[in-house]
Image 1: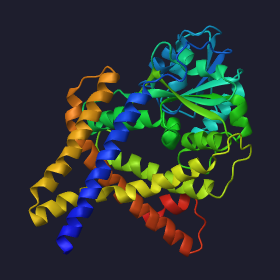
Image 2: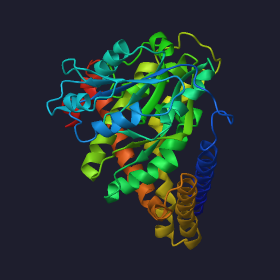
Image 3: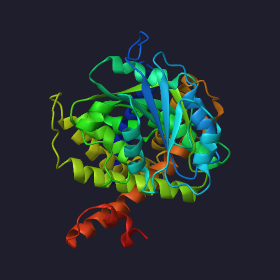
Length: 394
């Protein structure tokens, strides 16, 4: 009796996995929808803030792309040279662009750099661009168009992977196109809107929600959640493309996802205890559920491979074929997403590798970091950055 029951449970897992693939496909299709089908005229001029620390390799391209963008009301660019030692600020000043200014505060990190940029910028609409990112022509105009709606607090761009020379970076290219970018269109994945290389904010909304916090490992994502929980709309503009550089080795990927995972745990502990202040929207429970899901889903995701184990042990070929069909579904989803982004379809073939690699990497990191957080709590430590990035995680 035990084996039939296990096989039935495994088939249920396969069916749930199929539903998850279908949901992912629908999300990819819907992610290409514009926030508003009619072109929206930006309501005013915009300030582009580029925090940079030792970014001499790519800073000139980033600044030129931002400063020369088309915008009906004009663009000012504020480059915050965060104590660079490689001449980043000098390179920008040598460009001689009249709408670009360089601010040189002492080196104090990403959050303070954005705060300095906000202080030196003049306009209500602000676009934050990574120092190693490159934006396409028209991005600033596209990102600020949705602010014609007074309820919009932030707009996320479509992030594309620029370095695709290694297997790791190719895997992440598929992840960005099939998961991270479409998630920005979904309310349940809206927090990822802040993780792109270009995000636009309404200055008043940022000030109302406290701006960028320095008590987190990912202040950009936390800023988005603060806007969401206080009722501001956060939208995604798929036509606005910003290029970024991703980890090119497994070691770099592990370090990046470790930081993301620790930030997720800190975020859940922080925001589940903090109710929204404005409550413009009655469904404030949904962002709390989404936060919990960011912890629960990675931990439970490896159960999707249980049917394969059962198929091997019991010799149930039908169950094995059903499990393989799920991976085939991921290839289909990747092909659709890449096609809609006008990318080559060949990377879709590594979608199963992307799914399996990141599934177990994220699960292992989440379990490890949850253990570290629990140990810190049991020892009476405050659950802050040092508890998750200190000696427990070395």
